[in-house]
Length: 376
Image (cartoon, rainbow, N blue to C red; front, side, top):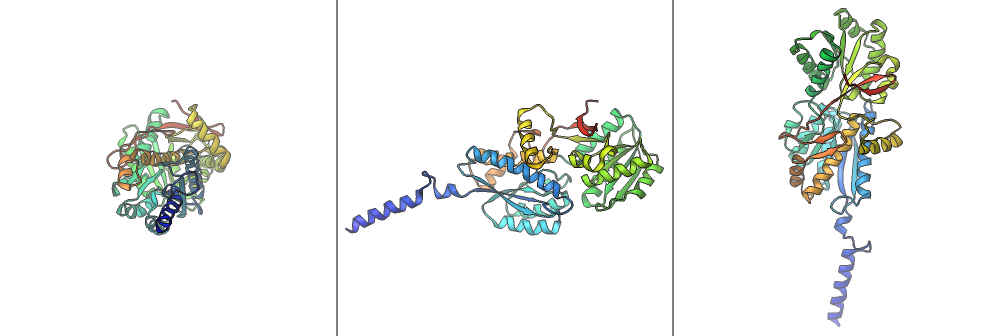
């Protein structure tokens, strides 16, 4: 009788271990967690929400196909408000959850660099789709960027001014943030290094201000023919409207975050002619790009920016790395990210030894109230 009870107990234990979900084990029911730490509120919320939308599209695509390693994927969402203080606190929460394999985030370089040491120390993979400060990826071997350092974008911008537009006198207007100070300085150095160009003025403005009149007056008095704007999308609309009132012929150029429909909505006719370098163009005929753009527009109400497309690819890179590693061990996944060759919608992506991605840029310009590809 005792033997019968013992056998029955074993059968019951086996049944509980398998469960009643078609033979799926309890272990496989635990999802693969990826954190998303971005601004969901505040001045840069539109960026964060668009990146989250892109990430959700990628995760749903994988989950419909069975997930990764037999597990479904779950995004764990945090609002860092693009604040270094918030990001530092959120990073501690993320690393305390041992089921989180990696994080998409953060937004600005300064905020990303505040959180990165915590991720590095705790061996949590961080992939930022937009941190462009040269020092970001140097923080450690768990820190990756799925975009380029800002100098790569400015090389394209400087080439447009010197060789496509054939202008000479260049002004720079940058937001007063850690990123704006660094990026503006890099832009200035590259302009000075080009024998065809002359840097006539370099002005800074508050990120939260809509009045750029004093800076514009100095740029105009210096004779600027082209102005490189270094800021978020909220800078471009007011700057373009105010500048075109005093100099209708001024040529404005922006960085990759200028490629967003919000700029056209905020700037209207004033942003006509604005140039930007991008790693992704929403009007591409590529079927993968078209599928993503159509789904994104359905959910978000407008075309995805290049940065949103990089967020989509960033999640894909992390999931492909998990699949390739065949494991959720962070070190193995990190090694797989480092050696990946990913055919994303933002072009083929590989990471160098310090975690920087190499991107090829296209030139886009606003014409007729929409972005077009500029062929030169």
